[in-house]
Image (cartoon, rainbow, N blue to C red; front, side):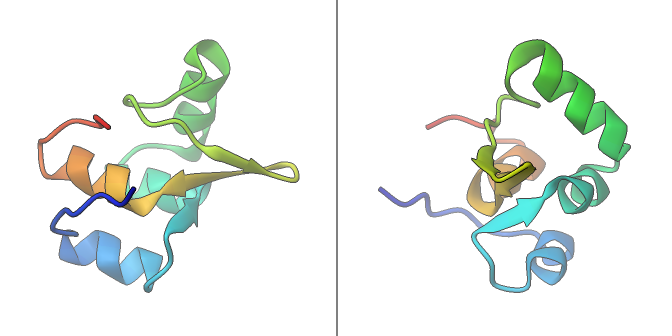
Length: 77
């Protein structure tokens, strides 16, 4: 199941064609601190309605859902 959304230019530059980005890159795209992203994840298991993929001790965030959030569509699906 793939999500078809328009990726904003800033996010496209950060993601460089990848499907998942790191917490620091998500924070940069969302104009928030990395610690804010981590805190929201720790408290609720998600951040802005987006659940990350755990890879080792890293959180990787789906670019398609971040793009939907930045486009004002919300992080549904």
